[in-house]
Structure formats: C-alpha cells, structure tokens
Image (cartoon, rainbow, N blue to C red; front, side, top):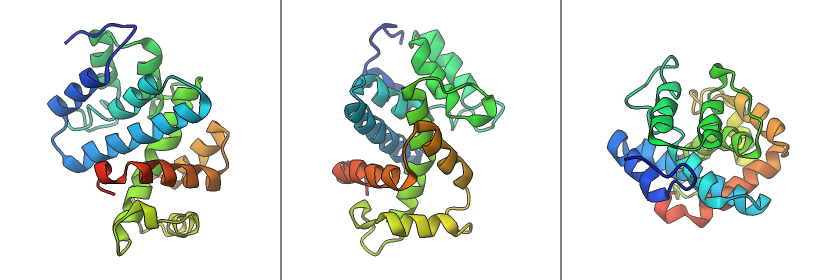
Length: 190
C-alpha cells in the first residue's frame, strides 16, 4: 500500500492501524491522540489532516514491535517504505524520547505533548463513576498525577516536560485535551 508522499490519507493510515493493532484499548488511545492532534492543529492553524494522521499512527507498530529497541523506529521505517512524508515520520520518531530525535516542529512537539497525557486522561475518566471524560476536571487530573500508584506506567516527568516544550501551561493543556476528547467522547469510549 504505497501512499502519495505529498498527501497520505486518513483511510490509508487507518488501514495500517487495523492491519497491525488488534487491541481495542490501543486503538482507542491512538484515536484519542488523533483527536487531540486535530484539535491542536485547528487551534494553531496547521494542517489538521496531517496532524491527525500522525496522532493516529504514532503507536501503529506497538504490537508488532513492543520493545524500545524496535518501537517506533521499525514502524517509522515501514512508513518511510510506504512513502509517508519525512516530517510526519520524524514527528512519530520524536514521540519516543529514548530515540533522541529532536522535536523541532510544532507537530512533533504536539504529538509528544498529547501522547502520555491522552493516556492519563483516559485512565482518569475510567475511574470516574460515569466513566466519562466530560466529568473530569483539571484539579482531579493534577491530583491523580501526584499519585504515583495511579496509572503507574504513565511517565509524569514526560507529561510536564512535553507541555513545557510545547509552550503550554500544564493546566491549560489538560483543560484543552479534556475539551477536545470530550467533543469526541462517544467515538472514543469516553
């Protein structure tokens, strides 16, 4: 499935996801990051389709390459072979701090800022009685961030670092993502 290097489509990206990701929770995470990326693209006047595709694809290879030695590098090589544009692939590489790929575009910084926080917000929503992102507040998220036992696999340092790198106050970033995910809550299972 080669893509037009200038215009990859969301349908092509979704096909890659469905071919490589069986886990419904991982798919929902990728859809959440897509939603967040599209929201930030609209806010910043960037290309919503391209940013959304980057969010959707950032973990498409996690199940086939589940180690730091493989993910997302081997997935990025797959994207390059398929003809995905270099800036999109570089942004996906940049979401993995351990690859030490500079996040030198707004798209790359946004992906880094949205990835861990979307996962954390989903976890916070799931422990609410309603299980709805719409019932999550900034203060409850910040309280849960301080509890290292809650969603222990989420890297809190990365959440703080990413917001700072992206140039957004953490409270504003949390509120923005809650609103963005809330607007698409039904499709995201939130």
